[in-house]
Image (cartoon, rainbow, N blue to C red; front, side):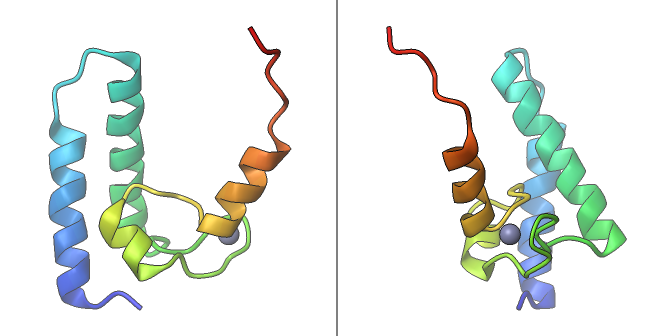
Length: 87
Ligand SMILES: [Zn+2]
């Protein structure tokens, strides 16, 4: 469970990510994910996986606060992804 100090650390990291000036598509995606995480943090939905509705692991949120899904759901989603043809 995240405590207030954890939330302050996460908020500062997300605010820095969201404020970063970006030019590449990947950087824009990262910025948008950080901004969305800030909305979840302010709205009370932060830390809950929207797929399984379980709490996302504290260590995962502290390491990567813009993550939206828990590890299990992210792994499931990646394994469900369509195969790419090999080059
Ligand atoms: Zn999940």
